Length: 147
Image (cartoon, rainbow, N blue to C red):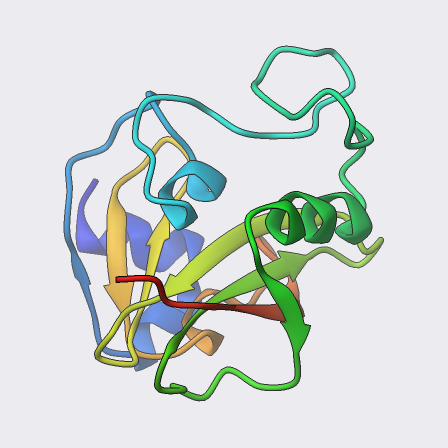
């Protein structure tokens, strides 16, 4: 997808620094990208079309996404600041508090996102994706880095 089309979908990208880091694909989604997987689509859809842990409720509420990431060692935190020894995930929600997107903080403090069936991008801020398509940041989570 062109920069113009991405900026049409995500208008805040026009004011933010970002770069495309991969080609478009439907093989994985933002949740998979956030957990460093690129072979499945993870989503709590009620039609059971996508991968999701059997014992976590299949609904798009923020609590289901938090439960998913807690299982992987993440805990709720208060800010999106780079914190030594931790990696962070930002969960976006729509006006009905349904999960819409997950972005992962990189070691340099920037963020990476898989934009639905479109490309992966690296963006400087979480505000870059706030808007009508993805909503607002609903929760930040962090996990100790294990190296």
